[in-house]
Length: 357
Image (cartoon, rainbow, N blue to C red):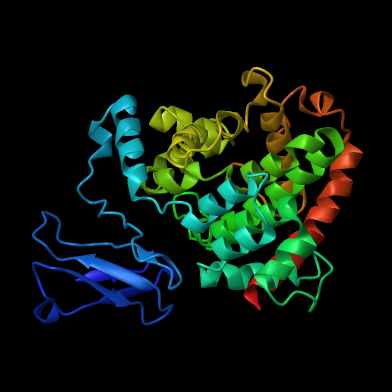
């Protein structure tokens, strides 16, 4: 039987006579040490492709079932979307520590001690927060030795951004074969978009700075759910891009009947994000259709700044024109984008370096 680790994409062939058929088994990937879960109960398909949770992931993280039993070609676009939305429950949830931390941070009566206790319940995330807090990006190299100290030094708003950033790094770090993105590419693009979103909000809507960063970071999360289905239509999509339009977004809509931004909106409902953020994710490519959602305009422009900084969203998403009215709505000029792109490039380099140390 052939299995594939979705974390490092290593493939292995296991002798059938050594497998405990009829059971669900888990074991560490020999390459990346991530947890591989294999369902050996009676199934129709011969080959099983499993998803692997990173070594630091919660034990209750779910895995995708094999794709071989899904004849999407026989479904209407509405039925296919319903199927994808149903399978959104198979995607990893946002880490519980992030959701709890946001509750505490939004409570005006909370203290630095309260938030420290929440973060310290997940040692993997706590360790990453300390690394980022001590990075050159925040100018605190070697000065932060505890989560409580990080909370005091960074402040609530910056701390929430750091928690969101490190919590989503594993979720967004996987390879997306359908979109032609190697492992880590979506994460860097998302981080670049988040930083650019914050820079724009700081200039034009300071009260939205935190929301802009959070939405910028997960604006492409719909691709995570859609990737297996895009992979199944990869040939048709490539032909569409060659012969009809260079826009991957248009290819999604034409060949699937919907795009990754619509699926992102469904994900937001699962993660219980505010509707303003969900709408911004839904219209981050078409903010003019958002009925004036300023956050959608911010993330849209940040998406283009990320590409200018060298962190594009992949083939068919780069080199796309900025939607009409986007610059005017945010009162920015092209030279402002160039300036912010340079800052984004340096920031991504500093933050990613701290997370890989």
